[in-house]
Image (tube, rainbow, N blue to C red; front, side, top):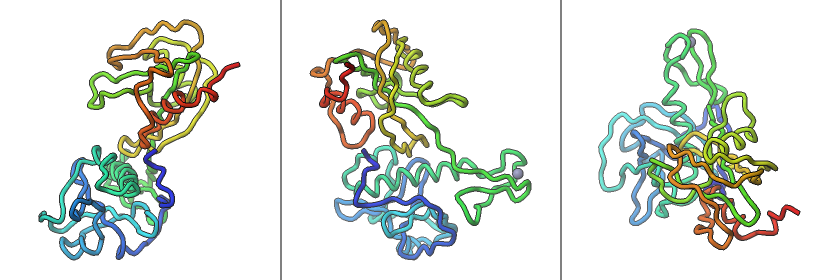
Length: 283
Ligand SMILES: [Zn+2]
């Protein structure tokens, strides 16, 4: 999965006054990120080079990758030459020109950036918010309200019926490949209840033996993905929600058309079912 970057390590613990020199500069513009072009390779730009070339008006510590800190920057001037360009954050996830650990660091940086960007004013009194000095939070200088980072939990669901697993395709989304059923956890709901509800809503099936598998930080959509396997309980007759899904069908193990892509929890789960029948024996 994309977050498996060992021996590299991403550390998201907050630092109070880190020194940006020697660090990396992260600049987002709409849904694109500034990257340095080094021949065929891409990399997150050095803070010092960006500061020297464009001038940094404001910065905010984001996270650390190995020994380097990443800083969200606002620049005093901006022009591009052949060494730098903006790249869409969504397509970078699988872009081999950038190291895997830098790709994952940028997913995390994007999640933090969207939280900062979407919380510029206090929702209670509309005063511009300030960075909290000692923790990852924003604070209202007027009413003292503190705003903490938001993460949206969502489930990914492997519905199993003996030697078959349920695969689906989304309706009306850019991604048209195979997927597992998925959905966001509602307020007041456990993730296990989300699994049962989403399966019923999307394909009209009942499930049992709901078991947690693994998680994956989402990054781009500010979510935390929680993978669950469960077993069909009762009728296998699919009633597809056509607004949500373009396709939903049972696949025998040998018919499963995808392999682990080493990026997504979804494909790891499908490949686990496909390649390890011993783990799914019910008796
Ligand atoms: Zn306020």
